[in-house]
Length: 418
Figure (cartoon, rainbow, N blue to C red):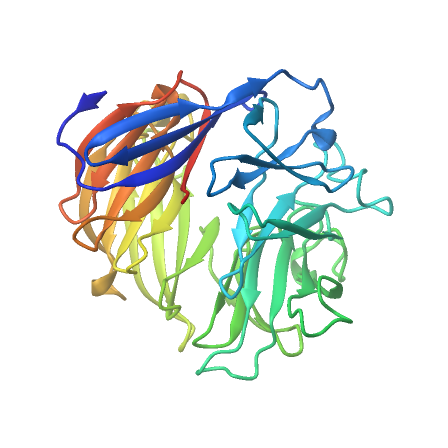
């Protein structure tokens, strides 16, 4: 353990690391200043094709590994970790204990041949993740991935909005709408609409078509406006969707962005992108603040030698954290800050105000937040290429402690457990 400053939090985290083929799972915990690392016993490789490998769901409060058999849909709890289990992209429903796991299908066709015989790929819904009471609820076939998910729900500002899940289908150029209200038995976990994102004037055929070149990647909901916002990367537009009718009611130009995320208060949408064409030596990251009330851009910033990888908000909703990675030509990569963690002050919105920049030594895999003794959040970064867990003070924007967890790998993820 390499200590820069002793961490002030008690915590228990799961630390998953993988080379995309096999992986390991550790429990990292700290109590009264003493840090312990325990690795789950690894089961040997199954030699199964990826579609048939167990899905890593989480870790229970009793520190048992939760996996899902993709064939039988049986959930298992074990003290052993299947080393070639597959950790799917997960989207938690903010209004329930349900989590939605994305399946992008096989690389060649984008189809999930195990679950969707008629074509398309799938999402799997579970309830009670990271709990011994976890349940499998169902698998729903949608369009071909890659997928992102967002969820509409009623609020004080928009009380008439139904509870629905929206899944974007990158290879189809569509959005699948799925019922997400358990009280509505006829529509719960059923596809109730498919939204065609095609803009005919931007297609060679000059007519609506599926698949198309919309390439959706960036999907958010705002309780303030009661609208779904989908970024069509292929067209450089945002499609504004009414969750009541599931119709596109506006298309807003928004070029130069590759993803969207909504602020914790859901008043603003932040678009992120990267310019790799204007300067042969430098990648320039782009951040844009979009107001959901007026549908106008209020602020935009360019960050030289930065390629934004992932975004995270602290539970208090006061900080935005952006991790960085590598992209671009060899000349551009030579200048990139691939190990930077950028921290922004959300209290200054709609202006984007950078509080500080940390250099972590390697790209962060994920960030996790745990309340410390003072009631604020301590930030934990999993750093894949060094097999480390880095503990960060978000207010001071400084590293508190570095913990060596496992061997260096290409991919890592961490999350808090009981």
